Length: 108
Image (cartoon, rainbow, N blue to C red):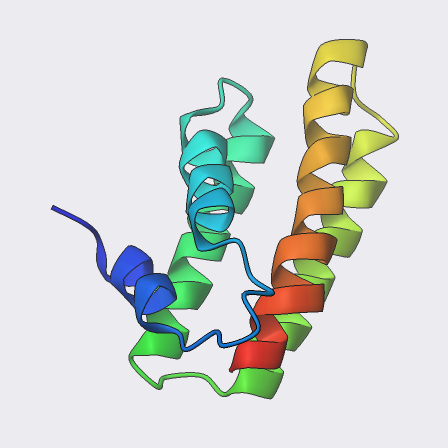
């Protein structure tokens, strides 16, 4: 059964097909399963922010601000990590920028 955040993403109207919904959901699921505690924690935050946005507990601007902060934290942390986790962290930061900040926020 899909979680609330997944249903929220699925329900977004995207006439331009700008947002790759499946890719975004896969990013979050993969992050939630990551063996690195830090990376997994960022997935938990993304899930929480999407659930809060869906429940109208936060605004679009708050969501955007939270995700921008999350991206900055991930980028900073990636500088301190070992090679394997560093690569995954850098990919996460890029995906947050591309899928969420550049595409998802525009649909909200």
